[in-house]
Picture 1 (cartoon, rainbow, N blue to C red):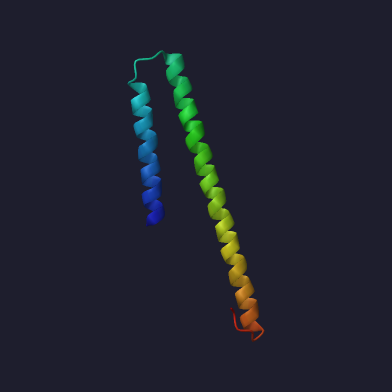
Picture 2 (picture 1 turned 135 degrees about the horizontal axis):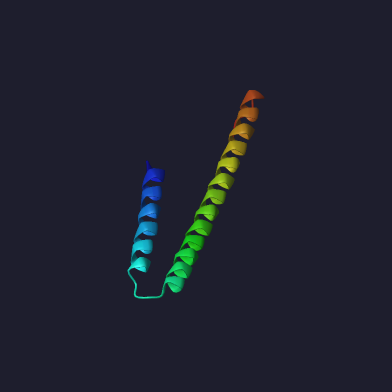
Amino acid sequence: MKTDNLFTFLGGVLVGAAVAILFAPESGEETRRKIKDTFDKEYQGLKDKINNLESRAKAAADAYASAKAGADNGAIPE
């Protein structure tokens, strides 16, 4: 549920930014550059968040595997 809210928010930010840029009184070339810059910035931010999530998921999986291996050997996890 929390992830759905995040993606909804990010989608709203992108749409709002695009609408604001489209209605700004600038040349087409400048508007396209701004749209591209905004997209690139948001895309990089999303990639960073996905990489962070991937790292956290891997760490959690490794911790689970370690705890399970310890439990299977009769060890009590700390």
